[in-house]
Length: 395
Image 1 (cartoon, one colour):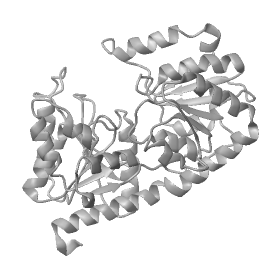
Image 2 (cartoon, one colour; image 1 turned 30 degrees about the horizontal axis):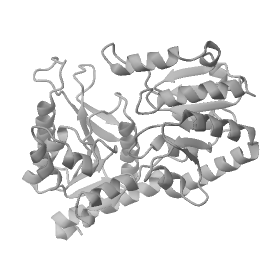
Image 3 (cartoon, one colour; image 1 turned 90 degrees about the vertical axis):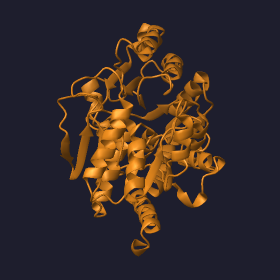
């Protein structure tokens, strides 16, 4: 497994990769994660987490020199770490980073298969990767087209692969999954007590970095309307909310909170990045997620598995896949529309029977389609297909 950011450095894809690694161990497959240390000396170069190995490479020219992203060094060191471990049968690259090139080089040198997993529409989907122009775009395009397999975590990413002309036999729709035992309904959410939220108060929750792409501005604008209608309601924001001084995200977030009326702001609880997101979700009544762009939206499924009714911004090929059609297990609202988001939230809160029924349907669909123990079997099947193509004796 090759990824850029991994525990203890937070990323949504890193969390999903942890879950996949644990599930692979249950299938008697030994994964190893190769990731960047981001120049942090305190992180061990080699680690064992939950039974699988983690190798962190320092992407600096010299150890301790960090200030610029040394992508070429990260790529080269990834190649060397793969080369040192002759036991690897396959390399699975998560998202497009410079380490992709080192992994691809190792794959060609050793005749071992490379699986590339697309994670974010507009960033590393096939159309974007093959159309973005830069100094090395032709090289990247040539390498990308020669991957042995492509994993698309949502139908829209799968569609982009077909539109780009990639071989259908190399493409698999492999949606992300959740631990449906950990993310399950709870009758006694202690988080409310920790945050000082009265037991009888309605609680909304958002999970994700407090950045523009995740629609935090849309959410806070909707919250003003929700709070006017239900001044007893509370909003929990769980996700990265601290940014360095040079980050535009810091100014953006600060501006959004300055626009809030004081009484509405007083009912917002920022809990930051948490390891117990399941408990945060269990403390809520309704999940709100007005994200502008995702690759899949794992937090939506986590909320569904928890039995929460979900109101999210529509993303074709993602939200319709997650919720289903006909009698959807969630509510999709138009993009960039805080008024409709607020209206749906207020209406749902006022209709307790609808709210509870939607929560039941959410849990039912998460169990049926997004249990990580079922999804890992599809990954394993594709791994075997790729290995069989390289070595017919293994097929």
